[in-house]
Image 1 (tube, one colour):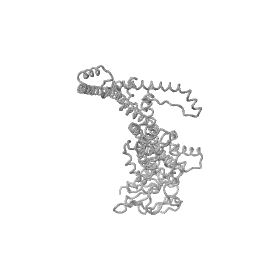
Image 2 (image 1 turned 120 degrees about the horizontal axis):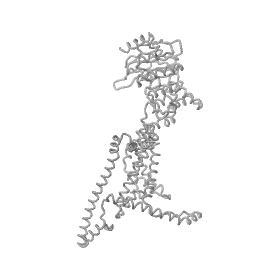
Image 3 (image 1 turned 60 degrees about the vertical axis):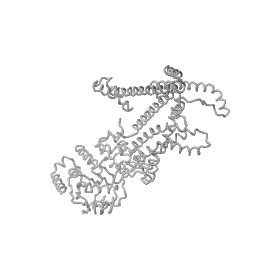
Image 4 (image 1 turned 90 degrees about the vertical axis):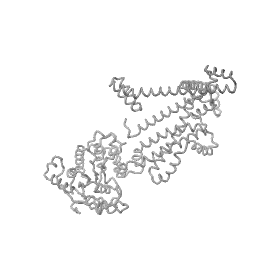
Length: 261
Length: 364
């Protein structure tokens, strides 16, 4: 385990365990998992399918029961899901009967109950413009393309002003062109907001490009942190400078070697 | 302009007319001609074939019935009477016409008679209203009930009564089934607890519902001065037809996409917002499918219920005509059959339009 001391810890997983009971005894996905995430840090969790990284994220989100251990958000144990931990889901999970704006608004209303209607509207429109949907406020979610839906998903998460942003393979369902576009959108909005973020991903390049730290998980059951890579590329990052950076390939090699085992 | 017409056709469910419009506008004549042949000409041909078969069959039955009638007269009244009967039948005299399946022509005549009849009765009513206007005004001033027309209802009046009953029943079904379905959908405990009720009552025949409802209504409304048969039949219709909506609503509510519920949890939506902004909108397609089935079931059972409850409407019209046994009764019954089918089809189309309009899924 890695102890972080210099800045405030925003999120901490302490001895986190997830086990599913089966007739032949518990199936342990995660055991005594330890993780600390600093304020304004962007970390990625990478690992093979079924290693329990999504389970970890949904537990932090409060959507999955914790078998043992704790998740501390700003030193307070979490209790269920809440808008202080906004989630960008793999499938955008927009309400198809609402417009893009309404999809963002429904969350904003919950988080800013005392704001005036105009203020709320401004918040929604600001984030939707940030993700490049300035001309699609009033389009029904069902009429948006997959990439546009996920843009709304990102806007919805940021508009909640969460303490932690949880991204569960946010670009996993997109084609590679759209994926790259959306990574740029995400990093662009994120660099302005600096919200502590945890992203689960399969994609090595995506992890390096976006994160300060990449957690590599061993394959389950009993998954744990196998290795950590600190990505010391300076921010704000731009795709072509990152890719041309000599260290990029070192990080890449590091991650790929780990995943090969 | 052309685009607009096509869109409105599509929206109304008349998209089979699309190639006709295209052909008229001269687009791809060969392809559209073929589509028209398949979608317009073939169906029309099938209708004509159907009428032809009916006609042939009706004539066959008529011939059988004619022979029998003549033989019967021969056996009971002798040769002379039999010859007279044969002559009478062949002359087309209505008084001795054999009573069998009416041919399409007879049905057409029956329809014409019914419309004529409606005109006469309407005129009668109008005359009655004019005649009693003065008296009724006086009676009203004295605080008495006005005199109302008590003559026989026309066929169109019967249709209207049936429609009123079916809408009252449908409304009752929707008001009972949608809220109940939501509650059942939200609570798995309730769902399992009440599953037996649904499973047992769903297949109960309309006739039994009618009897059950009349047992209750008779007691409750024993002294009330109102049309009991109408109340009984619309409640029965509602209870018979509500199950599809109940089951569909419960299913829709209980099977809301897990992703939506996760979003709702992350946003910490309250119970009210959760139900009205997430769960209900996402189950609307299923609820409306249920309502559509409910309306068509309501219309189907209505006829049987009216027939038994002696409440005015198409059902009792059919029954009275059957009992009546006049020369054109059979033809009128078949007219009623087509009217019932046509109205059922129209109601279904209407529900489909409403469903399209309110559901987020469909895109015309």
